Length: 480
Image (cartoon, rainbow, N blue to C red; front, side):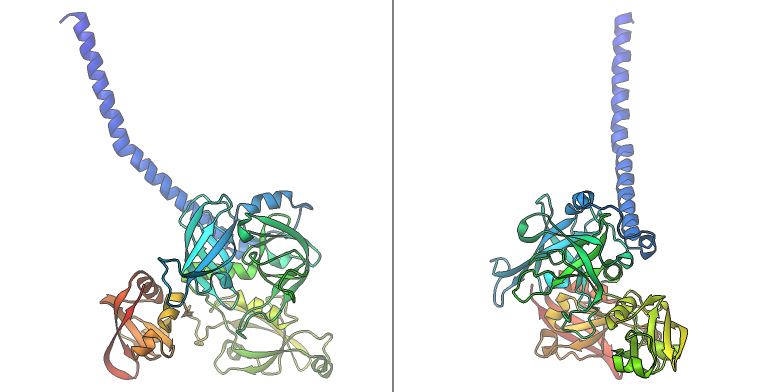
């Protein structure tokens, strides 16, 4: 074989070998690298979100350091979104756009698309649209909401978003500069400045008496469409969610109110993890300390929370608290007013141990209280009131640990049934334990809510009543 033929053979062999190696790399190595990078991105996003929601992490920081808003405004405006909620009109059709709409703002709190807003912004919505500052639009999923704090969490399917870090609202001082960032009227981000006027403010904005009102009051301009937007300190940290204004004219008049970040963070964390807020209870009835009460008891100031009644078997009862005691602080934070006390308790879950200082017969005492839930246990149990459930006409909760120990099967409890609703007409009653839906086993409320959210047509429930033998099936139809 001459030299030229040998050289041609070697060259061809080398090209074929190189092609095989490159193809193998793309088929085997590169997909593994892509999978690894995707997993790494998701793990990083999860870690970032957990750090942002961790109260321990936030308490390391003071509230304000810089004296201007340039950097804070620049960093925050990308993380505030415009929200439009669409609700089907009675007798209307979503496909024909027979809808009413309301608008507001929201705050991105994680790189992978979790958004905080007010419940009243998305209340009763059938479709929630989110527009980012770059004008990209998304349909959002409602992760959960809490009427008692007017908070809601949304999720859009997108990665690598700019987001805001939760700050420490406890460190906020009256007189500090703050900025309110919203996205009203599709104007993209609007920024207004003001100072903190008060903390722990109650303005009776919630119809529910169990609502937690302990607002940060500012004079930063907040108008219609700003609800759900961000209240930010000069460090650029999220220290409140703008929620309400006090007005006679219907316009801004110098008073705006925000849910403190330390309370919002706990609510948001619960909604993301459980779909509902796991709220701790002391099991007491309370009233404000009056001037007459302070004089009669020789109190140094008109401050504190007066216990009017302690429920038997409650967290307060187990800790030895009595009617007539006056609570001065929770975890060394003064509770001069009912709203301050409600905020401190609202930051905790069942099973959390808090330190309560109180006055009894002129002496200051301190006691540890293990908070319980509304069922008087330390389980994480809460009533689900998702829109799909309310549309059908019932409320649900998971079974407690004591109920599970007595039953031979898992399930979820029907707490209440609305009269003349779809479920009501099916003759389902409170106390019914749902074990199956369309032959699918149900172990918790999350699974049942997910199924109802994604299915329509004929729905068959199977379950039982505690005091009646046998199984009880029910059937109804669910429209789109």
